[in-house]
Length: 339
Image (cartoon, rainbow, N blue to C red; front, side, top):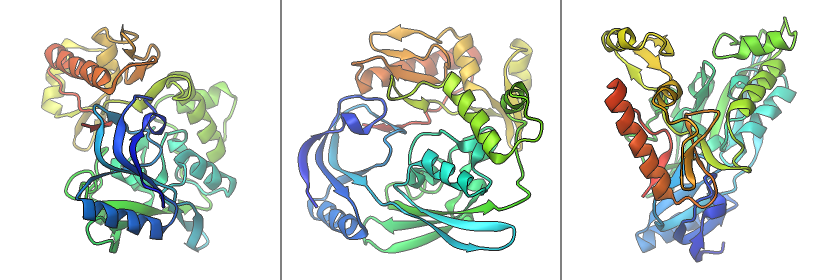
């Protein structure tokens, strides 16, 4: 295990912004991970876990230990005639893991194809897309306590999942590192969800009347590729803002003033398309130096080359204030701010 000081994290975040960590280490095993946690406790350092680097924005340098996890592996825990329980290590690439499940004809994750990041970060955000969330298939999460190194298994209920929320993002923030996740997936009679977004239209355009889970995944990939920029081509972290959920009473007030507002009824109120709000406010495609809003999807902030994390953060703050002023709706950032 090699601990490096004053380490550049530019290649470890999909925004591609320059930021340095006081210390950096890669953990290729549980032994490395526990040694790194001990080093952190001895030095009394803040710690930042680097996965795929797709859900963070470095507003400043990181004063602490940045730890890159390299824990890989996929195994079948148990199965019956209808379902299979698959355990994936936290450093498995999320999209590649989904592609593996599809080759096995395991259903449940196909709508979440092409979301950037690793398996270990999926429960933290409770990532979701096209009517499906990670919580729908997660049965348990294996975690390590940062202060003691003790292992703990969290059940689905104990994770306190919500819309882009979990106990790891709130009550237990900064207390655990997630090392593995177990998913319950279907082996037959797959329950396809094609009614959200443009999936059904995409399938019909391809002449697919009886889609498989692979067909749904392919449709999602085509839709995402048409709207979301590739971080390898231009720095970004996918959707920067959450879709706000407002009360039905407030929705009635807002929709009266903006009758074309894109919305989705939920159990807790009405979800508003944040991208629609940002586009209607005139931000889509705007560029300020090298920080900008993507020209195909207003929900995505981009680094055109040499933008700093602070410049991208300031742009997001201007957008939040403008949406509040124009629509009286408060946007929240989905991306984690590293300050």
